[in-house]
Length: 493
Image (cartoon, rainbow, N blue to C red; front, top):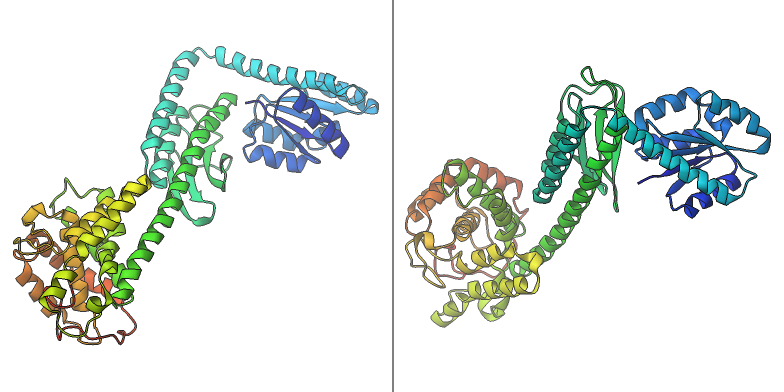
């Protein structure tokens, strides 16, 4: 879309020109000096008409020449002259420094007509440059195809890094033989940046196109002005940059909104899980440790070639998010049972063993009421089946082997490992050697043998997680069964 940049030292003249631009329906911005105006142009303002006071143009002629050559080639300049400056303005037009001039004593409607004509002239100039290029039809087809593929690809990207890499690849097709880079970031947390670069090393003279979103600037496209093969950037190249920037800015904004929603959802789910954790008198960092053990196990299984058809990046992300929900159903267990000192009666134990079904029910209802929480379907699996056993002797259903969802089998080991390695008021933590031996004994009966083997290969990494997220001191809590651990039928269910 055409845009007009108005530059004049007198605020009344700037407002006069802005009103004229509004009359002809062309967006416009105003500045009181050339330095501010050139900052707008360098910042990617994408203007087609420059309506400027002769002094502002002539006094910064060299600066304007460099600025327009790089950032807005082909732009039409219209001089806004006071009556006493008309003669000098006419000389500037004759000298080729401007496309035309306007007498500020004339009616505003006349200025509106001239601004519209200048914008039309800019379009004609760009079209003429396009049509004079014998390769234009082929390039036009290639550009459309590249932009179409970019739009499709951005829709499928699930990370900012993937978006940056895709946009960089598209720029390489659209602007070959040039150094290009794409940087993306969250305006609210710009420290973390996602960057992709391709082509020759970037030189000293660059064009930077910002990616404007509702939250602020979320990135920029950077392209080398000069190229040994294709020369300097031209008007068509500049417009191509903005054609890439528009869908990329939109996709970046959508991804930032998605991440914000995801953080809010995860915070809500974690808060729910912590309620269950606090009622069960769990230790402070239990949920975080189980989540990171689950990630270690999932990545290790994939590295070892196990269950690779199931363990995608999305699977790993979801198991990390949903692992803390494993004992959510304990919110439905009465305090008299959940916090009882000593061994549970058979009736109380039967009631305790209903907590997986309660957790699954709570999460299922959340998913049914909110489509954005579809990933919590894995949380249902984990909550429902993490007490199942590989040999079929677990609860609540008695599933066996690979009939138990993989996510639940992973979290089962993570939960047991954390219980064994974490000191409690009623027991000491087990030694690393004892834990390894015990997990080996559970392999093939309680736990998936592939998961046990893969985890034990990475036991040192698990020890580091435990050390990093160690509780400062065990809580002074009601005692359960002496020496009980999660593989028993005592209170630590």
